[in-house]
Amino acid sequence: MLGSATSLLFGLISLSVPIAAVVGILALALAALYSPMPLYLAIGDIFWTNSIDFILIAVPLFILMGEILLRAGIAERMYGALSHWISWLPGGLMHSNIGASTLFAATSGSSIATAATVGTVAMPQIAKKGYNPSLFMGTLAAGGTLGILIPPSINMIVYALLTDTSVPKLYLAGFLPGAILAGLFMLTVLIACLIRPSWGGKPEHSTWAMRLRSLPDLVPPIGIFGVVVGSIYAGLATPTEAASLGVIASLALAAWNGSLRIEMLRLAIESTMRTTAMVMLIVFAAVFLNFVLAVVGLTDLLAGFINGLGLSPMQTMIVIVIAFMILGCFMEAFSLLLIATPLLAPIVAGLGFDLVWFGILMMLMLETALITPPIGVNLYVIQGVRGKGSINDVIIGSLPFLAALMVMIALLLAFPQIALWLPDTFG
Image (tube, rainbow, N blue to C red):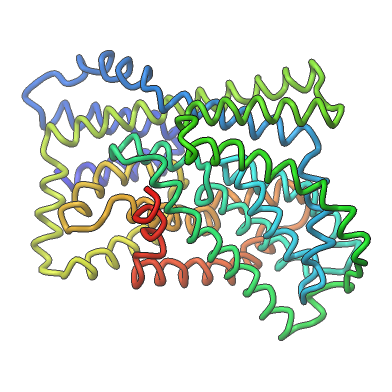
């Protein structure tokens, strides 16, 4: 059963079948082959039951919030402000790339949106300041991955739905790993530019007066983050209600900046509808697959196979991480989340691991998939923003940050409290 499911999965992916169809076909095929009951009759009920789940309303709201902020010009001002504060470090604006990605990740909830937005603002600086193109683009691709780790994260909401885990606890668990990972990315730039100073471009010079004048441009993203995440932990709003508050705040900021126009709203809503339709179809197909896997016993079969290896719980986790590294080379990150979570979550829980901790580990493993060739989506996003040259430049520049991600995964495996300290203290 396991072999046929794996063969069908990779066969469909190799044919470039859309991932929603891959998940749905896999579920229907497993049901037809191994279930004595017609499981397809449950599709309508499963789709309806999950489509009215209150937590899922947060997904289109967070997407809309990011679309409005993207079109309101807030990212450009934020980037300029950060360049005054942290570009004095060796590596210059490459630190601003990571800092801006960190702040925008705390408002958009999406890695692709983060990479595209910050990349569009930052890319012209390569030629102007004489930066090493590969390393500069690597900071943009890697910085974009923070969008699924730093709250609010759309991927965390989907993981919570699939594992029945608390979204507020997942958000709390993502803060410290996200900050540490951003620091590791900046350390990577620092080391690279200390070894090769020419990679860091022309030195940036900012006076304290310039820095102080730029502070108001940092208020919007911090304010949005405060509204969304602050309202959750102040007990004023659920994650879905917080997402709606974020949309209202982003509209207010767009109006304040003079960019709130009918055409801008039309484009933001249109893009939100397209993205939401794609995401929701994949999610509902994955929920049906989850149901089929439970009925036909594939989850128990996989758990028995892993237990039969005779590995310790930590050795098993290391095997899972290695498997993710390999799968990330061939599968898009969101698809990997939806396919792997129903299979692995029961096994991980059975080994005695906390599913909140595993959620953060899952986000980190998905981040590696975002910058792992040949499928790494962020690599193509940055190359698309660049619009010229070879994607190999982006791939080469991302490799040092892939190593930094490996270090972060190792730290989380060795010290689970990095993720669990905040949920245990305030959750």
